[in-house]
Image (cartoon, rainbow, N blue to C red):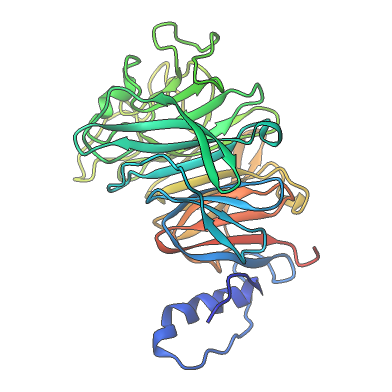
Length: 381
């Protein structure tokens, strides 16, 4: 069987994954060598830090090298740097686990080393009334203390769908949250009086910053989104966000305060029954995406690479794809996508999240029961 932490070349990893799928039928599995689909095996290696996770959704990196990993069912796991130890954190808020709802993102406070504070996003409520919530808490050992709900999207809804739920810090240390349109409430993405289909901006204490763009909607930073599950902020402060389209029309956008990103008034997708959501793909006063996927890839997780381990990728975007079961590498030039390739094709699993670690390595979270945390690093480290 596979150990908690196993290091392979890119090509070997692909063979391992095939072996794991057929392991109940095999007595012996020989690891072969073949050409990697993205780069030669000399360029990177894949290390399985943890596996057999239950729908892992997000990851954050502690100063000592440990990892915090959320599971959709409501567990917050502390996984040691080498993957040899996994502990469930106590005191996690109760989440509403149904369909797409559960525990979503985790980020560290900018002053975590001093205050030990983390922030969580999750679905809260019940089958009749639920919403996307942000809470803060102090991490004391393997316990959360002083939990405080900072934001709860309104109005509440019944459908356990389209929560958004991604978190990211701006350079001014305000916090962004994505919210979805709730599936059955898509027209509300254009209504500033609701939090459906918005990018929310809040201060660390949960208050609405005074310089948010809409006086009548104090938390709203941008609007017209469907279900954004990718959010990344560059070192220079550029905000990239991607969202699921309906049937086709997944988008990557550059988010700026006060802008309208169009959903459902404009879209490159159609409804699941093939009918038009809208006859328009563009309209005055509504922003155009920098990337569109038709058909959909179901994007989840977004990273802008700015590390030193892979200098050839600096400034590029990496997107997890759930439907296509792969990572997409978007080569960028002056905020434009100039080329798209499949990265780390040996993984060949539904991808839920992708993040850059402090040391410049890349972490990929695979989705579902039996999900994994996989580290991508150079062979020369």
